[in-house]
Amino acid sequence: MKFPQDFIERVSEANNLVDIISQYTQLKPAGGGLMGRCPFPDHPEKTPSFSVSEAKQVYNCFGCHKKGNIFTFLQQYNGMSFKESIEYLADRAQIPIPKVAEADYQASDAANEKKKLITKANQIAQNYFKNNLKSLQPQHPVTEYVKKRGLSSEIVETFQIGYSTEAWEGLVQELETKKIPLKVAEEAKLIKARTNGKSGFFDLFRERLMFPIFSMMGEPIGFGGRIIAQGEPKYLNSPETPVFHKGKILYGLSQTAKFIRTEDQAIIVEGYMDLISLFAAGIKNVAATMGTALTFDHGKILSRMTKNVIVLFDGDSAGQEAAERSLPILLAADVYQRV
Ligand SMILES: [Zn+2]
Image (tube, rainbow, N blue to C red; front, side, top):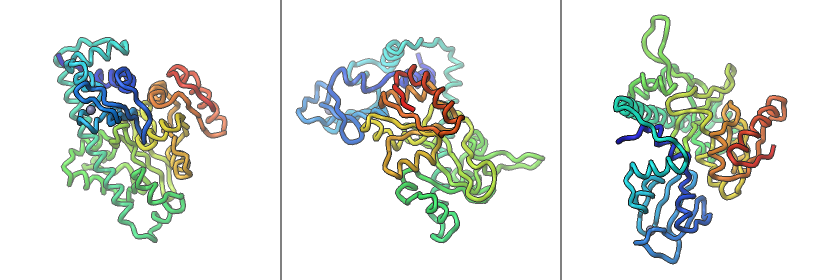
């Protein structure tokens, strides 16, 4: 029997690898992650060489080289099959196991293939935007704008900030060169089909500073674009795509999760420029929402890293309302909040 991918993802999200492994060995914060003595009986050791990343939900032993995720841990440690590990974790998180017809599995496989292609298109776009910014002359207005906004080269590198030029088909051509089907890139919301009887596609992001949005695994899943010259809208975010769901992702976490863990506290702000300003000022335990209120899923993601959350929204009434709305959501996710 085969499980649909979204079910496997739900099971994986509902369980914390750290909780499972902590039953077998004591984990202590070290560097950006957790370290402990290897729990595997065939690798007795006195000095800890077994590392776990709570943010990425993976483990790696530097001694015996066992590594993997929550499912492989149960397989390696308890001798479970893949199916048994999923059933065990679904049961643990009280998620009902679906009875799905074969046709649905195939549909789910196809959806997965598409997600992979969309992620690849995003990776190509990220590199393209990054190289655009890098190749500008020092006195170019965009380079000067970046400097004026206080974005040092270190910050640009950390957050992989890029630039979409004024060209209408710059990214379209790049994707074509890299053999990405343009229909897929359209689903990734990177480009759009021309209308009014014209054929072909055009770039959605033009003349913007580009902020890639990364999954917890560090894959680019969407983009935020801030306009450089005049024009509307000031901020343009990727719409929802098969890989990008605003309600399930916080901006910056793939860079800041380790700081949130070390500080045992998360500061939530309302957008990527707010996050980057704090980060540049040395306050690095930050995550940002992207034009949505905090959701229960956000709370769950945070509660894996810390129970202490500070909501730092705008002082205007909209910001205050958003902060108040987040209170019951974070409480439900078992997180304590200050505003
Ligand atoms: Zn080991």
